[in-house]
Image (cartoon, rainbow, N blue to C red; front, side):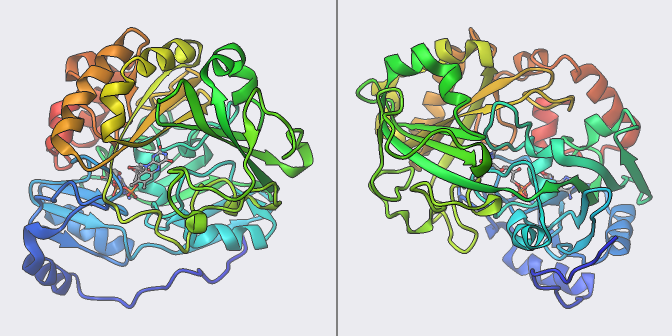
Amino acid sequence: MELWLPICLVPHKKEINQIMEESETIGSKRKNWAGNYTFKAKNLYEPSTVAEIQDLVKRLDQIKALGSKHCFNDIADSSKNQISTKQLNKVLGLDKDKKTLTVEAGARYGDFCKELHAQGFALHNLASLPHITVAGACATATHGSGVENGNLATAVVAIELVMPNGELKNLDKSDPDFYAVVVGLGAFGIITKLTLEVQETFPVQQNVFLNLPLESLELHFDAIMSSGYSVSLFTDWRDKKISEVWVKQKVAEASVQMEADFYGATAATKNIHPFLAQSAECCSEQMGMPGPWYDRLPHFKMDFNPSAGEELQSEFFVPRENAVAAILAIEKLNDQIFPHLFISEIRAIAADDFWMSPCYHQDSVAIHFTWKPHVKEVMELIPKIEGTLAAFNGKPHWGKLFTMNPKALKQQYEKYPDFLELTKKYDRERKFKNHFLSTNIY
Ligand SMILES: Cc1cc2nc3c(=O)[nH]c(=O)nc-3n(C[C@H](O)[C@H](O)[C@H](O)COP(=O)(O)OP(=O)(O)OC[C@H]3O[C@@H](n4cnc5c(N)ncnc54)[C@H](O)[C@@H]3O)c2cc1C
Protein backbone atom coordinates (compact mmCIF):
# COMPACT_ATOMS: atom_id res chain seq x y z
CA MET A 1 0.00 0.00 0.00
CA GLU A 2 1.49 3.31 -1.05
CA LEU A 3 0.71 6.52 0.77
CA TRP A 4 0.77 10.03 -0.56
CA LEU A 5 0.17 13.24 1.26
CA PRO A 6 -3.39 14.35 0.67
CA ILE A 7 -3.56 17.43 -1.48
CA CYS A 8 -6.53 18.59 0.53
CA LEU A 9 -5.64 20.35 3.73
CA VAL A 10 -5.35 18.15 6.76
CA PRO A 11 -7.30 20.17 9.30
CA HIS A 12 -6.08 20.94 12.78
CA LYS A 13 -7.86 19.03 15.47
CA LYS A 14 -10.56 20.86 17.40
CA GLU A 15 -12.29 19.70 20.50
CA ILE A 16 -15.71 18.36 19.62
CA ASN A 17 -17.44 20.45 22.27
CA GLN A 18 -15.90 23.61 20.90
CA ILE A 19 -17.27 22.84 17.47
CA MET A 20 -20.66 22.17 18.94
CA GLU A 21 -20.75 25.53 20.68
CA GLU A 22 -19.79 27.33 17.47
CA SER A 23 -22.48 25.56 15.54
CA GLU A 24 -25.11 26.39 18.09
CA THR A 25 -24.49 30.06 17.50
CA ILE A 26 -25.29 29.73 13.81
CA GLY A 27 -28.14 27.42 14.72
CA SER A 28 -30.92 27.14 12.16
CA LYS A 29 -29.29 29.43 9.59
CA ARG A 30 -27.23 26.63 8.08
CA LYS A 31 -28.32 25.83 4.55
CA ASN A 32 -27.56 23.24 1.88
CA TRP A 33 -25.36 24.11 -1.11
CA ALA A 34 -28.27 25.40 -3.17
CA GLY A 35 -29.64 27.46 -0.30
CA ASN A 36 -33.15 26.09 -0.84
CA TYR A 37 -33.14 24.05 2.38
CA THR A 38 -32.36 25.25 5.91
CA PHE A 39 -31.13 22.48 8.17
CA LYS A 40 -33.23 21.95 11.29
CA ALA A 41 -30.58 20.10 13.28
CA LYS A 42 -29.53 22.33 16.15
CA ASN A 43 -26.10 20.78 16.59
CA LEU A 44 -23.39 20.34 14.02
CA TYR A 45 -20.32 18.31 14.97
CA GLU A 46 -17.14 18.24 12.93
CA PRO A 47 -15.04 15.40 14.36
CA SER A 48 -11.63 14.77 12.86
CA THR A 49 -11.06 11.16 13.89
CA VAL A 50 -13.02 7.94 13.61
CA ALA A 51 -12.78 7.54 17.39
CA GLU A 52 -14.51 10.90 17.86
CA ILE A 53 -17.27 9.81 15.52
CA GLN A 54 -17.66 6.56 17.43
CA ASP A 55 -17.92 8.48 20.69
CA LEU A 56 -20.51 10.88 19.30
CA VAL A 57 -22.61 8.12 17.77
CA LYS A 58 -22.55 6.17 21.03
CA ARG A 59 -23.64 9.21 23.06
CA LEU A 60 -26.19 10.92 20.85
CA ASP A 61 -29.69 9.80 19.98
CA GLN A 62 -30.89 11.47 16.74
CA ILE A 63 -28.00 11.73 14.27
CA LYS A 64 -27.30 12.15 10.57
CA ALA A 65 -24.07 12.15 8.59
CA LEU A 66 -23.47 15.30 6.58
CA GLY A 67 -21.21 15.41 3.51
CA SER A 68 -20.77 18.44 1.26
CA LYS A 69 -24.48 19.43 1.55
CA HIS A 70 -25.18 19.11 -2.18
CA CYS A 71 -28.58 17.46 -1.81
CA PHE A 72 -31.66 19.52 -2.56
CA ASN A 73 -33.98 17.93 -0.01
CA ASP A 74 -33.86 17.03 3.69
CA ILE A 75 -32.10 13.67 3.27
CA ALA A 76 -29.02 14.90 5.18
CA ASP A 77 -30.91 16.65 7.97
CA SER A 78 -31.67 15.44 11.48
CA SER A 79 -34.11 16.53 14.15
CA LYS A 80 -31.13 17.06 16.49
CA ASN A 81 -27.55 16.31 15.44
CA GLN A 82 -25.57 16.33 12.22
CA ILE A 83 -22.08 14.86 12.12
CA SER A 84 -20.11 16.40 9.29
CA THR A 85 -17.31 14.44 7.60
CA LYS A 86 -15.66 17.69 6.53
CA GLN A 87 -12.53 17.03 8.58
CA LEU A 88 -12.34 13.39 7.59
CA ASN A 89 -10.99 14.11 4.15
CA LYS A 90 -7.69 12.31 3.80
CA VAL A 91 -6.46 9.86 1.22
CA LEU A 92 -5.39 6.79 3.16
CA GLY A 93 -3.58 4.83 0.51
CA LEU A 94 -3.27 3.60 -3.02
CA ASP A 95 -2.66 -0.10 -3.49
CA LYS A 96 -1.14 -0.29 -6.95
CA ASP A 97 -1.15 -4.07 -7.05
CA LYS A 98 -4.75 -4.51 -6.01
CA LYS A 99 -5.74 -1.36 -7.93
CA THR A 100 -7.63 0.15 -5.04
CA LEU A 101 -7.68 3.56 -3.41
CA THR A 102 -8.82 4.07 0.19
CA VAL A 103 -10.15 7.46 1.24
CA GLU A 104 -11.87 8.91 4.25
CA ALA A 105 -15.58 9.42 3.80
CA GLY A 106 -15.46 13.22 3.62
CA ALA A 107 -12.86 13.37 0.83
CA ARG A 108 -14.29 15.12 -2.18
CA TYR A 109 -13.53 13.64 -5.60
CA GLY A 110 -11.77 16.82 -6.62
CA ASP A 111 -9.46 16.54 -3.61
CA PHE A 112 -7.67 13.44 -4.82
CA CYS A 113 -8.38 12.73 -8.49
CA LYS A 114 -5.50 14.85 -9.81
CA GLU A 115 -3.00 13.02 -7.61
CA LEU A 116 -4.57 9.67 -8.44
CA HIS A 117 -3.95 10.46 -12.10
CA ALA A 118 -0.37 11.50 -11.34
CA GLN A 119 0.12 8.09 -9.75
CA GLY A 120 -1.08 6.48 -13.00
CA PHE A 121 -4.66 5.62 -12.05
CA ALA A 122 -8.26 6.65 -12.65
CA LEU A 123 -11.77 6.12 -11.35
CA HIS A 124 -14.26 4.72 -13.83
CA ASN A 125 -16.47 7.80 -13.77
CA LEU A 126 -17.36 11.07 -12.05
CA ALA A 127 -20.49 13.17 -11.57
CA SER A 128 -21.02 16.51 -13.29
CA LEU A 129 -19.01 18.23 -10.58
CA PRO A 130 -16.12 17.04 -8.39
CA HIS A 131 -17.06 19.02 -5.27
CA ILE A 132 -19.10 16.25 -3.59
CA THR A 133 -17.88 13.82 -0.93
CA VAL A 134 -17.34 10.19 -1.83
CA ALA A 135 -19.59 8.82 0.95
CA GLY A 136 -22.35 11.40 0.35
CA ALA A 137 -22.34 10.78 -3.40
CA CYS A 138 -22.46 7.01 -3.02
CA ALA A 139 -25.19 7.17 -0.35
CA THR A 140 -27.63 8.67 -2.89
CA ALA A 141 -26.49 6.65 -5.95
CA THR A 142 -24.93 9.68 -7.60
CA HIS A 143 -23.96 8.98 -11.20
CA GLY A 144 -22.22 10.34 -14.25
CA SER A 145 -22.99 9.10 -17.75
CA GLY A 146 -22.06 6.17 -19.97
CA VAL A 147 -24.00 3.17 -21.21
CA GLU A 148 -21.40 0.89 -19.67
CA ASN A 149 -20.70 2.98 -16.58
CA GLY A 150 -22.45 2.18 -13.34
CA ASN A 151 -23.04 4.92 -10.79
CA LEU A 152 -20.17 6.15 -8.59
CA ALA A 153 -20.98 3.57 -5.88
CA THR A 154 -20.10 0.77 -8.31
CA ALA A 155 -16.42 1.64 -7.75
CA VAL A 156 -16.71 0.89 -4.01
CA VAL A 157 -15.25 -2.46 -2.98
CA ALA A 158 -15.16 -2.03 0.82
CA ILE A 159 -16.28 0.36 3.54
CA GLU A 160 -15.78 1.03 7.21
CA LEU A 161 -18.97 1.96 9.06
CA VAL A 162 -19.58 3.37 12.52
CA MET A 163 -22.66 1.44 13.58
CA PRO A 164 -25.45 3.05 15.63
CA ASN A 165 -23.93 1.53 18.80
CA GLY A 166 -20.61 3.21 18.01
CA GLU A 167 -18.83 0.02 17.01
CA LEU A 168 -16.88 -0.29 13.79
CA LYS A 169 -17.93 -2.68 11.05
CA ASN A 170 -16.07 -3.45 7.85
CA LEU A 171 -18.03 -4.60 4.86
CA ASP A 172 -16.86 -5.72 1.44
CA LYS A 173 -18.54 -7.22 -1.57
CA SER A 174 -18.57 -10.68 0.00
CA ASP A 175 -21.07 -9.42 2.59
CA PRO A 176 -24.65 -9.26 1.23
CA ASP A 177 -25.36 -6.22 3.46
CA PHE A 178 -22.74 -4.32 1.44
CA TYR A 179 -25.26 -3.80 -1.37
CA ALA A 180 -27.69 -2.12 1.01
CA VAL A 181 -25.27 -0.06 3.11
CA VAL A 182 -23.19 1.67 0.40
CA VAL A 183 -26.22 3.26 -1.29
CA GLY A 184 -27.74 3.44 2.18
CA LEU A 185 -29.42 6.89 2.21
CA GLY A 186 -27.60 7.53 5.50
CA ALA A 187 -29.75 4.93 7.31
CA PHE A 188 -27.15 2.49 8.67
CA GLY A 189 -24.63 4.66 10.50
CA ILE A 190 -21.69 6.79 9.44
CA ILE A 191 -19.33 5.51 6.78
CA THR A 192 -15.80 6.56 7.69
CA LYS A 193 -13.67 4.95 4.95
CA LEU A 194 -14.29 3.72 1.44
CA THR A 195 -12.04 1.63 -0.76
CA LEU A 196 -12.55 2.31 -4.45
CA GLU A 197 -11.56 0.22 -7.41
CA VAL A 198 -9.22 2.12 -9.73
CA GLN A 199 -7.93 1.43 -13.21
CA GLU A 200 -4.99 2.65 -15.29
CA THR A 201 -5.33 6.32 -16.05
CA PHE A 202 -6.77 7.27 -19.41
CA PRO A 203 -6.97 10.48 -21.39
CA VAL A 204 -10.33 11.77 -22.54
CA GLN A 205 -11.32 14.20 -25.26
CA GLN A 206 -14.56 16.09 -25.17
CA ASN A 207 -16.48 17.21 -28.25
CA VAL A 208 -19.66 19.25 -28.14
CA PHE A 209 -22.30 19.33 -30.87
CA LEU A 210 -25.15 21.81 -31.17
CA ASN A 211 -28.80 21.51 -32.14
CA LEU A 212 -29.47 17.82 -32.51
CA PRO A 213 -32.96 17.40 -34.02
CA LEU A 214 -35.28 15.54 -31.66
CA GLU A 215 -36.38 13.24 -34.48
CA SER A 216 -32.76 12.27 -35.01
CA LEU A 217 -32.46 11.43 -31.31
CA GLU A 218 -35.61 9.34 -31.63
CA LEU A 219 -34.16 7.39 -34.57
CA HIS A 220 -30.60 6.99 -33.26
CA PHE A 221 -30.90 7.17 -29.46
CA ASP A 222 -28.82 4.08 -28.68
CA ALA A 223 -26.10 4.99 -31.18
CA ILE A 224 -25.91 8.56 -29.86
CA MET A 225 -25.72 7.52 -26.20
CA SER A 226 -23.06 4.93 -27.13
CA SER A 227 -21.00 7.34 -29.24
CA GLY A 228 -18.61 8.06 -26.37
CA TYR A 229 -17.43 6.70 -23.04
CA SER A 230 -19.77 9.24 -21.43
CA VAL A 231 -22.44 11.21 -23.29
CA SER A 232 -24.68 13.99 -21.98
CA LEU A 233 -27.56 15.62 -23.80
CA PHE A 234 -28.58 19.12 -22.74
CA THR A 235 -31.93 20.55 -23.74
CA ASP A 236 -34.32 23.35 -22.84
CA TRP A 237 -37.07 21.27 -24.52
CA ARG A 238 -37.73 24.01 -27.08
CA ASP A 239 -37.80 23.89 -30.88
CA LYS A 240 -37.80 20.07 -31.00
CA LYS A 241 -34.05 19.84 -30.52
CA ILE A 242 -31.35 18.84 -28.07
CA SER A 243 -29.34 22.04 -27.69
CA GLU A 244 -25.98 20.42 -26.82
CA VAL A 245 -24.52 16.92 -27.04
CA TRP A 246 -21.35 16.46 -24.95
CA VAL A 247 -19.39 13.42 -26.13
CA LYS A 248 -16.54 12.36 -23.85
CA GLN A 249 -14.37 9.71 -25.48
CA LYS A 250 -11.36 7.79 -24.29
CA VAL A 251 -8.67 9.13 -26.64
CA ALA A 252 -7.57 5.61 -27.55
CA GLU A 253 -11.12 4.74 -28.66
CA ALA A 254 -12.17 8.09 -30.15
CA SER A 255 -14.19 7.73 -33.31
CA VAL A 256 -16.21 10.97 -33.27
CA GLN A 257 -14.25 13.93 -34.61
CA MET A 258 -14.88 17.65 -34.38
CA GLU A 259 -15.57 18.21 -38.06
CA ALA A 260 -18.18 15.53 -38.25
CA ASP A 261 -21.85 16.17 -38.69
CA PHE A 262 -23.24 14.37 -35.66
CA TYR A 263 -26.66 12.91 -36.50
CA GLY A 264 -27.73 16.32 -37.79
CA ALA A 265 -26.01 18.34 -35.02
CA THR A 266 -23.08 20.63 -35.80
CA ALA A 267 -19.74 20.80 -34.02
CA ALA A 268 -19.30 23.69 -31.56
CA THR A 269 -16.55 26.09 -32.54
CA LYS A 270 -15.55 27.08 -29.00
CA ASN A 271 -15.93 25.81 -25.43
CA ILE A 272 -19.49 26.24 -24.21
CA HIS A 273 -21.44 26.07 -20.96
CA PRO A 274 -24.47 23.78 -20.53
CA PHE A 275 -26.49 27.01 -20.16
CA LEU A 276 -25.53 28.41 -23.58
CA ALA A 277 -25.66 32.04 -22.46
CA GLN A 278 -23.11 31.57 -19.65
CA SER A 279 -19.34 31.80 -19.89
CA ALA A 280 -17.59 28.44 -20.34
CA GLU A 281 -14.68 29.51 -18.14
CA CYS A 282 -15.72 27.09 -15.39
CA CYS A 283 -16.33 24.19 -17.78
CA SER A 284 -13.99 21.31 -18.46
CA GLU A 285 -11.98 21.69 -21.67
CA GLN A 286 -13.77 20.79 -24.92
CA MET A 287 -12.96 21.10 -28.64
CA GLY A 288 -11.49 17.59 -28.74
CA MET A 289 -8.51 18.61 -26.60
CA PRO A 290 -7.17 15.48 -24.87
CA GLY A 291 -6.78 15.71 -21.12
CA PRO A 292 -6.82 13.56 -18.02
CA TRP A 293 -10.05 11.73 -17.17
CA TYR A 294 -10.62 13.77 -14.00
CA ASP A 295 -10.55 17.01 -15.97
CA ARG A 296 -12.93 15.88 -18.72
CA LEU A 297 -15.53 13.52 -17.19
CA PRO A 298 -17.05 16.24 -14.93
CA HIS A 299 -18.56 19.17 -16.78
CA PHE A 300 -17.06 21.62 -14.30
CA LYS A 301 -13.50 22.23 -13.13
CA MET A 302 -12.70 21.67 -9.48
CA ASP A 303 -11.19 25.13 -9.06
CA PHE A 304 -14.40 26.84 -10.12
CA ASN A 305 -17.77 26.92 -8.47
CA PRO A 306 -20.24 25.76 -11.12
CA SER A 307 -22.76 28.39 -10.11
CA ALA A 308 -23.83 30.52 -7.20
CA GLY A 309 -26.04 27.70 -6.00
CA GLU A 310 -29.20 29.57 -6.85
CA GLU A 311 -30.86 26.68 -8.57
CA LEU A 312 -33.03 23.69 -7.84
CA GLN A 313 -32.62 20.22 -9.26
CA SER A 314 -34.75 17.16 -9.83
CA GLU A 315 -33.98 14.02 -11.81
CA PHE A 316 -35.86 10.89 -12.80
CA PHE A 317 -34.54 7.51 -13.94
CA VAL A 318 -36.37 5.37 -16.48
CA PRO A 319 -35.42 1.95 -17.84
CA ARG A 320 -33.27 2.51 -20.90
CA GLU A 321 -35.79 0.84 -23.20
CA ASN A 322 -38.39 3.45 -22.12
CA ALA A 323 -36.08 6.43 -22.54
CA VAL A 324 -37.11 7.69 -25.97
CA ALA A 325 -40.83 7.47 -25.20
CA ALA A 326 -40.26 9.17 -21.83
CA ILE A 327 -38.24 12.00 -23.42
CA LEU A 328 -40.93 12.57 -26.05
CA ALA A 329 -43.62 12.61 -23.35
CA ILE A 330 -41.70 15.20 -21.30
CA GLU A 331 -41.16 17.28 -24.44
CA LYS A 332 -44.93 17.70 -24.65
CA LEU A 333 -44.78 19.63 -21.33
CA ASN A 334 -42.23 22.06 -22.77
CA ASP A 335 -44.41 25.18 -22.48
CA GLN A 336 -44.87 24.53 -18.77
CA ILE A 337 -41.26 23.53 -18.14
CA PHE A 338 -39.35 26.17 -20.10
CA PRO A 339 -40.20 29.30 -18.03
CA HIS A 340 -38.76 27.69 -14.89
CA LEU A 341 -35.85 25.78 -16.36
CA PHE A 342 -32.17 26.60 -16.67
CA ILE A 343 -31.42 23.36 -18.53
CA SER A 344 -32.19 19.64 -18.65
CA GLU A 345 -29.59 16.90 -19.00
CA ILE A 346 -30.11 13.34 -20.20
CA ARG A 347 -27.57 10.66 -19.24
CA ALA A 348 -27.20 6.86 -19.40
CA ILE A 349 -26.28 4.71 -16.41
CA ALA A 350 -25.51 0.99 -16.43
CA ALA A 351 -27.33 -1.45 -14.15
CA ASP A 352 -25.88 -2.18 -10.70
CA ASP A 353 -26.51 -4.37 -7.65
CA PHE A 354 -27.26 -1.77 -4.96
CA TRP A 355 -30.68 -2.43 -3.49
CA MET A 356 -31.83 1.19 -3.34
CA SER A 357 -30.07 2.35 -6.47
CA PRO A 358 -32.61 3.55 -9.06
CA CYS A 359 -30.56 1.49 -11.53
CA TYR A 360 -30.74 -1.77 -9.54
CA HIS A 361 -30.48 -4.55 -12.16
CA GLN A 362 -31.71 -2.09 -14.78
CA ASP A 363 -29.79 -0.17 -17.45
CA SER A 364 -31.29 3.28 -17.13
CA VAL A 365 -31.49 6.78 -18.52
CA ALA A 366 -31.78 9.77 -16.20
CA ILE A 367 -33.72 12.89 -17.21
CA HIS A 368 -32.49 15.78 -15.11
CA PHE A 369 -33.85 19.30 -14.59
CA THR A 370 -31.80 22.24 -13.32
CA TRP A 371 -34.53 24.65 -12.33
CA LYS A 372 -34.54 28.37 -11.69
CA PRO A 373 -35.13 29.05 -7.99
CA HIS A 374 -38.90 29.33 -8.58
CA VAL A 375 -39.76 27.08 -5.67
CA LYS A 376 -43.55 27.30 -5.83
CA GLU A 377 -43.83 26.79 -9.59
CA VAL A 378 -41.22 24.02 -9.65
CA MET A 379 -42.89 22.15 -6.80
CA GLU A 380 -46.17 22.35 -8.75
CA LEU A 381 -44.52 21.09 -11.93
CA ILE A 382 -42.67 18.14 -10.42
CA PRO A 383 -45.86 16.09 -9.79
CA LYS A 384 -46.82 16.62 -13.45
CA ILE A 385 -43.45 15.32 -14.57
CA GLU A 386 -43.69 12.42 -12.13
CA GLY A 387 -47.22 11.69 -13.42
CA THR A 388 -45.95 11.69 -16.99
CA LEU A 389 -43.02 9.44 -16.17
CA ALA A 390 -45.13 7.00 -14.12
CA ALA A 391 -46.07 5.25 -17.36
CA PHE A 392 -42.36 4.64 -17.94
CA ASN A 393 -41.49 3.47 -14.40
CA GLY A 394 -39.80 6.76 -13.50
CA LYS A 395 -37.95 6.90 -10.17
CA PRO A 396 -36.56 10.07 -8.56
CA HIS A 397 -32.93 10.77 -7.62
CA TRP A 398 -32.75 10.40 -3.83
CA GLY A 399 -30.80 13.63 -3.38
CA LYS A 400 -32.96 15.92 -5.52
CA LEU A 401 -36.48 17.34 -5.35
CA PHE A 402 -39.39 14.98 -5.77
CA THR A 403 -42.96 14.61 -4.56
CA MET A 404 -43.68 11.01 -5.47
CA ASN A 405 -46.10 9.16 -3.23
CA PRO A 406 -43.96 7.08 -0.81
CA LYS A 407 -46.08 3.98 -1.37
CA ALA A 408 -45.58 4.18 -5.13
CA LEU A 409 -41.89 4.92 -4.60
CA LYS A 410 -41.35 1.85 -2.40
CA GLN A 411 -43.12 -0.32 -4.96
CA GLN A 412 -40.50 0.66 -7.51
CA TYR A 413 -37.81 -1.06 -5.45
CA GLU A 414 -37.77 -4.83 -5.59
CA LYS A 415 -35.38 -4.98 -2.63
CA TYR A 416 -37.22 -2.39 -0.54
CA PRO A 417 -38.62 -4.91 2.01
CA ASP A 418 -35.12 -6.33 2.57
CA PHE A 419 -33.67 -2.85 2.87
CA LEU A 420 -36.27 -1.88 5.48
CA GLU A 421 -35.63 -5.07 7.44
CA LEU A 422 -31.88 -4.48 7.40
CA THR A 423 -32.21 -0.88 8.61
CA LYS A 424 -34.14 -2.27 11.60
CA LYS A 425 -31.40 -4.80 12.28
CA TYR A 426 -28.63 -2.19 12.17
CA ASP A 427 -30.48 0.66 13.86
CA ARG A 428 -33.00 -0.76 16.29
CA GLU A 429 -33.34 2.56 18.14
CA ARG A 430 -33.71 4.49 14.88
CA LYS A 431 -30.90 6.89 15.78
CA PHE A 432 -30.42 7.63 12.09
CA LYS A 433 -34.07 8.28 11.40
CA ASN A 434 -34.87 11.67 9.95
CA HIS A 435 -37.87 13.23 8.28
CA PHE A 436 -36.76 12.02 4.83
CA LEU A 437 -36.45 8.39 5.94
CA SER A 438 -39.64 8.50 7.99
CA THR A 439 -41.52 9.76 4.93
CA ASN A 440 -40.00 7.66 2.19
CA ILE A 441 -38.60 4.51 3.76
CA TYR A 442 -39.87 3.60 7.25
C1 LIG B 1 -24.39 21.41 -8.61
C2 LIG B 1 -24.76 19.97 -8.36
C3 LIG B 1 -24.45 19.02 -9.32
C4 LIG B 1 -24.80 17.68 -9.10
N1 LIG B 1 -24.47 16.76 -10.05
C5 LIG B 1 -24.87 15.49 -9.90
C6 LIG B 1 -24.57 14.51 -10.89
O1 LIG B 1 -23.89 14.77 -11.87
N2 LIG B 1 -25.07 13.27 -10.73
C7 LIG B 1 -25.84 12.92 -9.66
O2 LIG B 1 -26.29 11.78 -9.58
N3 LIG B 1 -26.08 13.81 -8.67
C8 LIG B 1 -25.61 15.07 -8.78
N4 LIG B 1 -25.85 15.97 -7.78
C9 LIG B 1 -26.47 15.50 -6.54
C10 LIG B 1 -25.38 15.09 -5.55
O3 LIG B 1 -24.42 14.30 -6.12
C11 LIG B 1 -25.96 14.28 -4.41
O4 LIG B 1 -26.91 15.08 -3.81
C12 LIG B 1 -24.92 13.79 -3.40
O5 LIG B 1 -25.55 12.95 -2.47
C13 LIG B 1 -24.22 14.94 -2.68
O6 LIG B 1 -23.18 14.46 -1.88
P1 LIG B 1 -22.83 15.26 -0.54
O7 LIG B 1 -21.47 14.86 -0.11
O8 LIG B 1 -23.10 16.69 -0.69
O9 LIG B 1 -23.88 14.59 0.46
P2 LIG B 1 -24.93 15.28 1.47
O10 LIG B 1 -25.93 16.04 0.69
O11 LIG B 1 -24.21 15.99 2.53
O12 LIG B 1 -25.61 13.95 2.07
C14 LIG B 1 -26.34 13.10 1.22
C15 LIG B 1 -26.74 11.82 1.95
O13 LIG B 1 -25.57 11.05 2.19
C16 LIG B 1 -25.51 10.72 3.57
N5 LIG B 1 -24.09 10.70 3.94
C17 LIG B 1 -23.17 11.65 3.73
N6 LIG B 1 -22.00 11.25 4.24
C18 LIG B 1 -22.20 10.03 4.79
C19 LIG B 1 -21.38 9.12 5.51
N7 LIG B 1 -20.12 9.39 5.74
N8 LIG B 1 -21.93 7.96 5.94
C20 LIG B 1 -23.22 7.67 5.73
N9 LIG B 1 -24.05 8.51 5.05
C21 LIG B 1 -23.54 9.67 4.60
C22 LIG B 1 -26.26 11.85 4.28
O14 LIG B 1 -26.69 11.45 5.56
C23 LIG B 1 -27.40 12.04 3.32
O15 LIG B 1 -28.36 11.05 3.54
C24 LIG B 1 -25.49 17.31 -7.92
C25 LIG B 1 -25.78 18.27 -6.95
C26 LIG B 1 -25.41 19.59 -7.16
C27 LIG B 1 -25.70 20.60 -6.11
